[in-house]
Image (cartoon, rainbow, N blue to C red; front, side, top):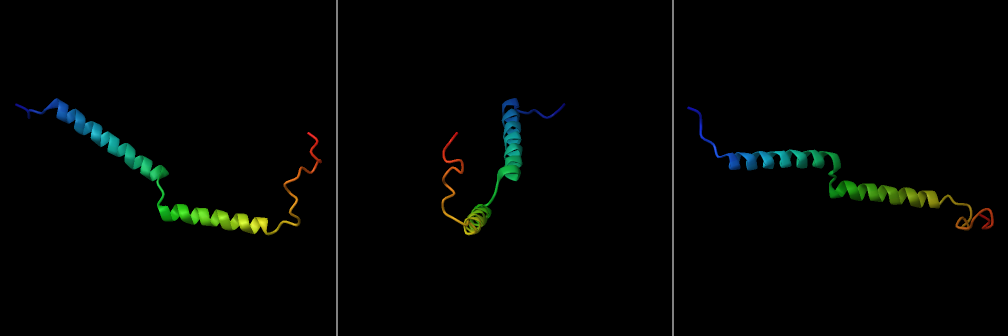
Length: 69
């Protein structure tokens, strides 16, 4: 005769395993370390400053058409 198992415990164990598999997939897809996020933010800020430093005049906020829509 086969092994007697508790179906409730088996069902909960399977749900935990499925949840952990989904969490692992999400970590691989979306997870980044704090250092990676800071590095990307620093790079973006440095690129923005470099781009802004090449502006000829500071009046770029005005509409080139004189405000006519």
